[in-house]
Length: 318
Image (cartoon, rainbow, N blue to C red; front, side, top):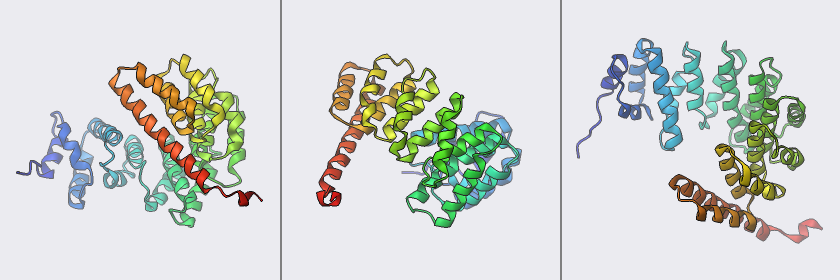
C-alpha cells in the first residue's frame, strides 16, 4: 500500500495560497514533528489571519470528535502569537494536556496578557492542573503555584477572569476556596451563581447540596444547567427525583442531556428505569447512542457503589 501523505511543504504552501485549504490537510498538524513545526512557524506570519482562525477552529472541532489527535506541540508554539484570538485558541487546544511544563506559560498569560479574554482562557486551563495537584500527579510546588495564581485572579476586576478562576479552584482543597465559592453564589448575578455551581460540582464536597438542589428549579438556564451538572458530579441522591421531574418539562436540549448524564452519575433503580424508558421511546440514532452511553455509565456508577459496600468495614465505625 502506497503512502498517500503529501510533503509538509505542500501543506504549508496550501495555507499561503488564496484557494480553499483542503480539509484533509488538518490531520498533518496532529503530533507534528519538529522539522514540520519549524517550517510552519517560518511561514506562519504570512498566513492570512482569517485562515489561521479557521484552521484552529477546525482543530478544536477535531479534538471533540477524535480523542487520538493532539495539537499540543503546535499550540505551545502559538501561546506567544501576537494575535490574541490565536493565543486563546491555542490555550483551548491544550485543554486536555497534563504537562506541568505548561504551567509557567499559562500563569504568565493569566497574570500579564494584554487581552482579558485570553487571560480568562488561561484561568480555565489552569483548573486542570488544580485537579492534577489534588490527585498528586504533578509536583506540589507546581500545584501551589497554580492555586496561588488562581486565588489572586479570583479578585480580578474583570468579572470573566474572576469567575473562571473560581471555577478552576473548584477542585482545590485550600481553605480559602469555599468562602470564595459561597461569596460568588450569594451575588445577585446569574453568571456568578453559575460559576459558583460549576465550582461546587468539582469540589466533591457535600456541603453544597442545598445550594445545588435549590438551583435545579432556577428560571435562569445557565444556573439550571450548572446545578444539573453539579448534582451529577456530586452524586446527590436527593436530586434524583428532581432531575426526573425536570426531564418531563425541560425544553433546553443541553440541559436535558446534562440531566440524563447526571442521573447516570447518581445511579439508583429509579434512574435506570427512567433512562431505559427514554431509550424505548426514541428512534433518533444520536439519542439512542447517547442513552446507551448513559446506561453504560450508570452501570459503572453502580459497580463503584457495590465496590464501596464490599470494602466497608463495620469496625471502622467503632
